[in-house]
Length: 409
Ligand code: JHZ
Ligand code: ZN
Image 1 (cartoon, protein in one colour):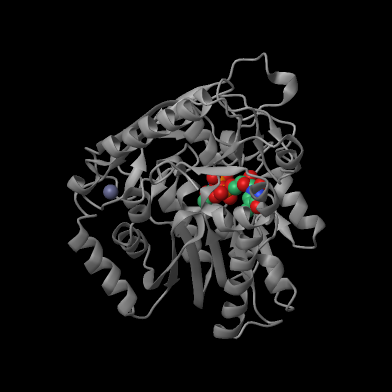
Image 2 (cartoon, rainbow, N blue to C red):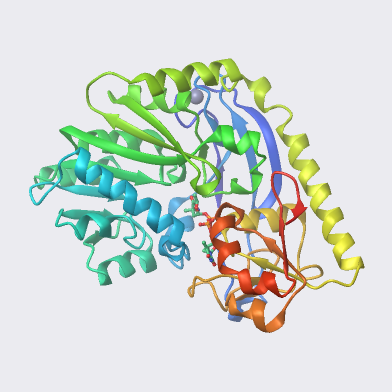
């Protein structure tokens, strides 16, 4: 089941302007078990729109959070070394800058398998993870990270505060886009934050998505695609100050936002707001050629894969990522073209990609099977994956990256 929104998820204004439709796609993380291959799979329309009033880019459809995130959620953050390293550096810097210690409390919203909180816990800083997904939350608990299996919202924040819990640091990485009730979530953050606390939030940057044609990061889990302009307005509505903005290459380009109860924005915030206005991100015109560019990537990738197939090549794919599900289903690349997908995540192996039903195998299969080409669905981890696949590449295996323009490496 899905609902169509009538007004902006942030500011409530009607008249959202559609900018891209990816047709109907299955849920990107709803991997299919072997026993269910005969069963039909639901798919849902996927349409992106722009709010001229507050600049927020967002999906018109809402699939319920319970459907998206509770049972069988297969994403475990710890399977990327680069991401764990990014998390470790984030934690070390915050421990230092915020003078965190045994007296502090760090709360992470959508704490997944504990890949970030463990770096605080290791330094003796008390932590609390909150995550609704059964498997990842259990993995975190087994690793000694106290984790509440729940969706975070205003009510949960009020309960925690009533128990005497206020967070010196609230962490929220790759979750703001995932919540259907954006304002309720941010209101909860505002409640939970200690008076001098800081919320440190990471979210993929819509400017990178548009400029680098990362259309595959659009799927039903991602209700929103944020600019600094849209975020600043969102936080201000809840009495919060966007104090600082940083940019990191993770997930194809992400913002890291430092949000406080009081204080002044620093020069990074002013610069991002000015750059976005100058670059046009605050107007619908900026997004109008996106759909045609996405169509161009589709045509280009289909042509490239057809040419490789015609030459007799065998093709596999790397990364059973959510973005891979969007890419394969939207472009229409299935078992005729690609033999299987490999992924290091043991919770994904043995299952099938949604929609296109490609089987997911251990990456070791690349060396035993030696396909000629590997379509890199997890292109955001290209450096890590190419380095790890040096032996396969040394024996003549080639990688194909789909975005921003399909090419053979
Ligand atoms: P990955 C994720 O999206 C999850 P996904 C989520 N939907 C989100 O919001 C965004 O990030 C921001 C595997 N892998 O992380 C692990 C290897 O096998 O790019 C993953 O299954 N070997 C919440 O799912 C997949 O690839 C490796 O060496 O699109 C990558 O998925 C590495 C590095 C990864 O994101
Ligand atoms: Zn709006």
